Image (cartoon, rainbow, N blue to C red; front, top):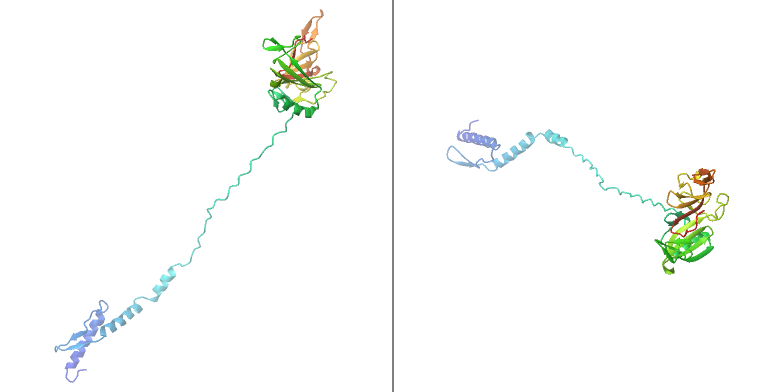
Length: 296
């Protein structure tokens, strides 16, 4: 509608154009002038139009250009489930070390006859030590005597009557009937254990020994060679009724059996008898008295 004067219509049209421009430009930059020149040179001030329009425009953008479904979709795509962390125990289990197995030593046999001694005692032991232990086992000794070997004879010493020899000038012999211990030295204070002997006082095949002594293989007085074929040896010859032998661990043996036979002329010839006819009559080891008398 045209106003009666025609001038205000133009002005209103121009204001509409300005507002249109500002509304359009606010999307790019909020900077429209706050005053708009009119065609007749006068100025009309527009107060608050730009900020109000921009605010509406911003609200429109937020409502129109960002659909609520986007936010919902984004939220749905983010998995907010917290996955529990599995804690691995890295602590090493304590190592159990088994206690060492202790095997107790076998009991000591104080009556064990050895090539190097008796029981726990080796040659060189003090007389008081071994005598105290053996006396507990066998009782009080039956005999004890000191003998002087005053005559040097090469590497040994003989008695003045030349009936026996020994490796030391002074000897002591302590016996329990069949079993004897020997001690030797230059004088009484220097005596030490030197050897032993175990001899039957009767027929070993019919009389049991009075003391239960034996070696590691079980050999003792009266043992038959046929019962210990791998534990002892024998030599042909000797005397008609006796011979000599040895154990595999070093003791010397006196044997009863027929180790000599006579021919038609009466001459004796050495033989090795049947093992079943040979029995141990004596055992010895170490340094002991040696008889100088003929064996037969």
